[in-house]
Image (tube, rainbow, N blue to C red; front, side, top):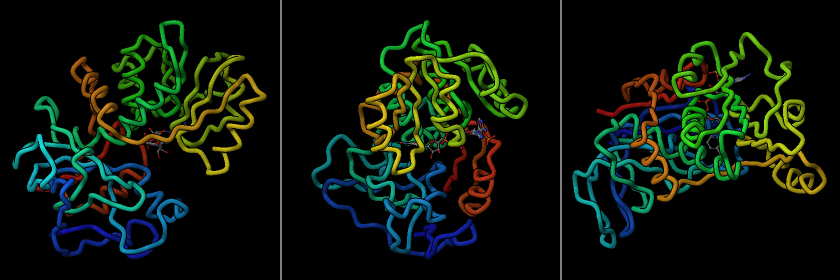
Amino acid sequence: MNAIVYQKFGNTAVLQSIDQPKPIIQSSQILVKVKAFSINPMDWKIRKGEMTLMSGSKFPKHTGTDFSGTVEEIGGSVSGFMKGDEVFGVVKDMMKEGVSAEYVAVPASLVWKKPSMISFPQAASIPVVGTAAVTALEKMGKINSQTSVLVNGATGGFGMFLLQLLKQRGADVTAVTNSKGVEFAKKWGANAVIDYTKENVLSQSSTYDIVIDLSGKMGYKAAKQIMQSKAIFLNPTPKPIEIPVSFFKNLFTSKKHIVIVSSPSTNYIDVLLGAVKDGMQIEVNKVFPFSQYREAYQYTEQGGYIGKVVVEIK
Ligand SMILES: NC(=O)c1ccc[n+]([C@@H]2O[C@H](COP(=O)([O-])OP(=O)(O)OC[C@H]3O[C@@H](n4cnc5c(N)ncnc54)[C@H](OP(=O)(O)O)[C@@H]3O)[C@@H](O)[C@H]2O)c1
């Protein structure tokens, strides 16, 4: 089968297409014929060698984490699936495995039936950022119409899910986005929208109960000036040292710094599919053919897109 791998850390030039044997499944696994996989910032952070503490430095490495496709083969101890079922899922070890291939072997517990109302590219967009968005909601605690939330980076993959989930729960959301995202943020229900290319969110006078930074550029220290006295700052891109340090500092400050580490599971996927039924939209900005995998990564790494970017295997 055809697979995309890399043999050293670097930019998209290190990605190469190779021929390798189809994976052999264990009894608890399913072999999926991949139809689509989505691109996540984590893919290129790992490829560029920015996460070696967790990814290790063993090569070759595959890329891509969440996928959709059809069931090709079912392990002996797996029930509830049939050959040909339309499914989506995620690899078990996001740091060391990848789905950028024609077939992928994954634990059945991380494969879910694809509802017919969503396409393969949309389904492949859900697990990583959708789960992160639900995890962020859990960290926020009780939310109602009095809860003011600032989502910085509100129309990328994570933001698209989070903004709509927050609105389904009635929060008062301010979305910070690029110019192209302004209309999307309004469509997804944001109460206020700030175009970060025109206005510095840190220079305005409003303060919030919750600030979440999905751009990785704001940081807790800067965010404090737009946080109310007992507000929380949610950080899904912590540096390793920030995890213990924020825990310790939170004991002494009323403005909390909370890191997010998410891990997909059926409970999260159920919440997300429920939200889709209730009208949550999954915007796939661009679908690239498998042969253009380098272009897909280059396009995504430049930013400026809305929602998700997906690679499709025909
Ligand atoms: N901890 C976890 O479990 C977890 C899980 C999933 C994702 N993440 C992380 O969460 C982050 C967001 O993920 P994602 O998939 O949504 O990434 P994404 O699609 O790249 O979205 C990031 C968004 O931030 C915007 N942005 C860039 N600079 C900005 C600025 N100065 N002010 C406001 N917004 C700005 C980007 O806009 P432009 O396109 O204009 O640059 C983009 O829309 C990533 O770093 C990802 O690695 C963490």
